[in-house]
Length: 333
Image: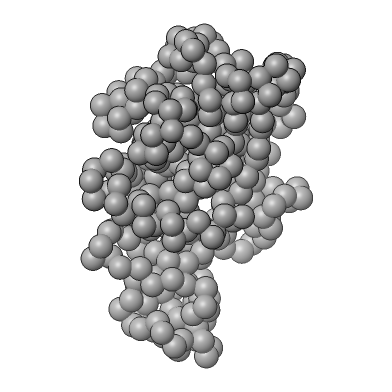
């Protein structure tokens, strides 16, 4: 039998990553120590933030090491356990994706119930993705009933949850941007957005003004660039912007120019706040309870895009950067 395989970072990408920056290799056998479990991964997450960890620039997350397997969210089944409270056969959520098998401290896994929801949901709508949307809207942006909300990257993993949660919390109008007409239809027909536009159809500022002629109260930013500038231009008095991501600039080799209309924040008394979901884990229980109710009544649904096999993990990651996913991008192992 061959050993389980893992994806290692071979070189640090300059600009857009390519397959040459990664290597698929067999992992060395590892014996379990006391307190550890062996997990056969079934599904793993690929996310835009991982692009930043491929650089060695100082950031909020430790860079991936060259010649070692990368990390990311995964759910798998325990095949061997020397940890109290974690049994063989349990499905667990952990942070050692990008590999077919992981050896993890029992304290670093969370047992999940795949009879309640599929394993993939714990990486998406019921996991960090969903919590990111909830924390950004409720705590960072201070969403109030009646607010008009705009979210960029709205057909992606976080954006699609943002729009639905905003509606569930009483937003009067939710607007999304996406990169194709198909995604725009998905936002309106499947996810209940009030309006959506394809940002490739014109200037984002014009498209947003058409969709929200009276302005916006909240902008949830996953894209940056011209979307952020457009949102500042459409802010109403006391408007709030929550910065979650800026995928439009992640592969730039030179610094992107900032919004040219920041002075408008003076007029609107608007605010821009960046955030990391890791600062808001205390909301996880609250979100899980509310999300369960929303899913039960149909006000929160999720779409997933899958690639199959560890040998297609890099394809899936590059697809996220190109916007090929609808909802959460995942790899079945």
